[in-house]
Image (tube, rainbow, N blue to C red; front, top):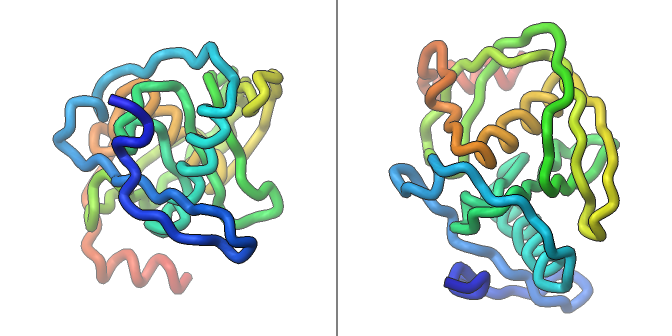
Length: 179
């Protein structure tokens, strides 16, 4: 299976470049519960995959996307919560340390329409690589920490549904968004 097998449609962005939106893998696909392989090649294919992942995340209105969600068993994720950090590309990420606790709503593109209340650490420090293979560390808190942890869980084959305290109805979500 090649990366191209998952391209769902092609559009053009404002600059006239191809956008490649991949098909989202939904539960109960086995790949969602399998640990991912370490990325060892930092090449043009990886750059294309990262760009496609970003396009896909935006198209489906997500704040994060992990490679297994588009059928690729590699330790790659993108996160963008629309804040000053912009798009964060995580290759081979590892959690170094966590602190505090937060409980809040989560959803997942691989579980359309399903939302749950999940408790996670409030802060996270991670080590990862960028698209060129350069290592970096990142500290995050609050919603960004939640999104990063959710995506790293995907890379370990852990689904948010295994961490849900209780499932939420859409009406409850609307109430939380207006707060």
